[in-house]
Length: 450
Ligand code: B12
Ligand code: SF4
Image 1 (tube, helix red, strand yellow):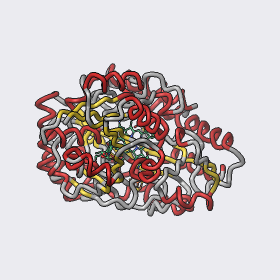
Image 2 (cartoon, rainbow, N blue to C red):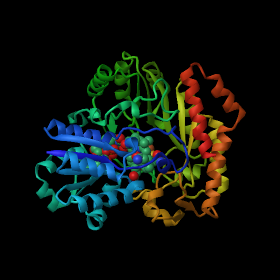
Image 3 (cartoon, helix red, strand yellow):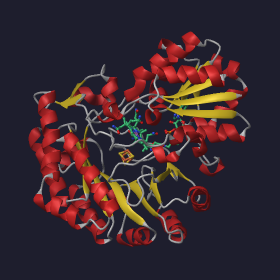
Image 4 (cartoon, rainbow, N blue to C red):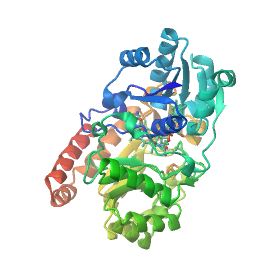
């Protein structure tokens, strides 16, 4: 069967709600690549239209449907693109009623029943579609009757083929934000695990069932990427790469042989000195940590299950290991007042990570915070297009207005990045033309947020 998978249109300006110019970069839709790989393995003909990176809008999608004549079109739905996804679905069904339209992804997972009722979509899949996609293709009529399909989670990640990156065209059009690559702006992305068992109330992935691929399977993918694309750098997109320390040691033993630099995401309570040493020796140069706040009561309100002191100590050992830190902080948290926000900003300055990101708390549908927001503040439930972490859709009771929260957001970026100490350190770390370019791009991003 011919299947077309679509990542819906979105500009960088829409994604960041700030003018980051061409610095933001686009990243590949790995979820669609996984589904495409499963379909190709079963003998189907698949195309992926990644609209954001190619600057495609609805017109190009209709032209592609006209020429490729897919029997099934799958669209990935995230919350900030809910209305775009719905409009696109209705447009395709109006023009090509014979084509089956399938929706999936985080937003479809949460609002499947509503989408089934309010849109022209034929099938909506909850959770990890690589589990069921070939069954759906084999019997479209049956699944159209079922309409909302519960895919659940893939138990054995090793059973999946490697993502079908070859369907994305020239991979050089993808590029990472300046603080997320070291050597190569076109660095590759991978996922070794899915799910996170922690309980942060704002997070879409909370209380997830953690599964991880075997080291052997991950290394096979890395070696095949090296062979095909001569890759020099990888960004691992797992929520918490270091949950299983034994796995990390085994992985580092293999990764150390590859001469590849890499970065990852994890929690500050899932690392220790020896582990970091092994990671550093195996090429890890940068870790993203969700630090969120410097006020203990705010950490408790979101059930981060970590103390401010724990974070302070953990940051020290990451620095000692010589690994760069991307610290993610949140403003507008439940229970926050401007005073507590300033405590977070001060904490960020005290910790002094290599990069700090200050995002605005966004209670995505399906999160615990979405269900309990009234206790904590006001939420604009109609502004789903702005659910991207950079707009004040949620305003805690401790603030007078959205404007006050936005002013705090600017203040955070200014206070953190406009410090002479920070600027001097960045300049002193420049070792190559590449480093210089990275820093100049970084300055542009900061400027957009201040
Ligand atoms: C990497 C990443 C990004 C990257 C790359 C996005 C891309 N091009 O794919 C970047 C940095 C660009 C990004 C941006 C954003 N992201 Co993001 N991102 C992630 C992250 C860490 C990994 C995504 C991934 O590849 N996972 C691995 C693959 C295998 O899983 P998957 O994508 O979920 O796909 C599976 C299912 O969802 C489903 N599925 C997915 N698409 C489709 C389509 C169809 C038709 C079907 C049937 C099924 C289906 O099947 C797939 C295979 O099992 C996730 C968290 C996570 N751990 O998943 C957040 C996550 C997806 N992001 C999120 C958010 C909010 C955003 C932003 C809005 C935030 C921001 N301002 O930066 C923007 C949105 C911009 C955009 N257009 O994507 C939220 C989504 C919540 C929501 N309700 O929408 C998540 C879940 C993070 C979180 N914990 O809250 N993101
Ligand atoms: S914020 Fe991070 S640690 Fe917390 S539930 Fe989400 S992925 Fe897990």
